[in-house]
Length: 297
Picture 1 (cartoon, helix red, strand yellow):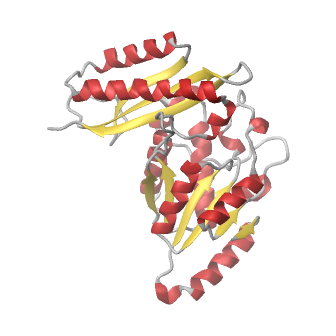
Picture 2 (spheres, one colour):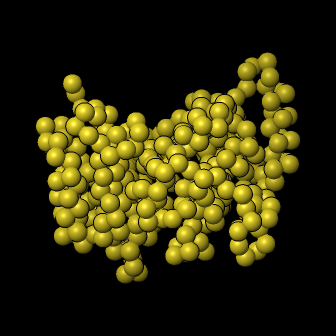
Picture 3 (tube, helix red, strand yellow):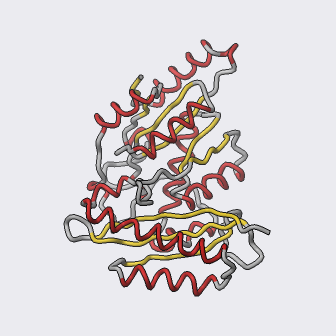
């Protein structure tokens, strides 16, 4: 496994790899991450290996997607442990650029001069309603990484369903020749979606954190049993979580095809939730989850 820090070296290595494997139809698979890797990330790397010959994983904590109220410096950085996991799973290249490598005009204090992608209005609802400019930061860094790696396929997890939707839209609208592959959410035995943020919780809190998935699953079951009063279902789930000590950001039933508010005519649905739970330090950790499903005709 090669660890690379600059775009120049990355392109040189990938060009050499492409020449070596040209007659075999070599494909580049790409998994962008912010590090602090867990089994969910490793599942995405495995998927990339199934669809490509060379797998590149990036580790870059993107400052452009953190709001002023979020502590960028507190995001866990576990490079050595990440390298070990990626070596074990058979990753070929780990791309670990600096901030100035990704954002050439970064002056050490701010990114105000950086050119950004302006995502569609769907980026301003759900997680985007409270995390202002978050998805603009995500779309911008992913586009930059796509240009650096130039992959044939890229793999993203379904846990960040809104992010996945926006990335797919970006690829479609900018006519990028990249196949986006969606990886299923990897969960603990109690249903809790794996997340780097789970590390902020102790064992008891992690057990309680499964209540978010349970609330979403309850909505799915009710809809499949014929209850199409979506607003009432959302309100009931939010109320139940609040009574269990959660600070609910949103619970929303949406069309999985458009991410617009679901109607009784929609058959392919996704129920999404975001809420904060008490963590180890007495603060609150924001968790997200979703369940995608189809209503039978």
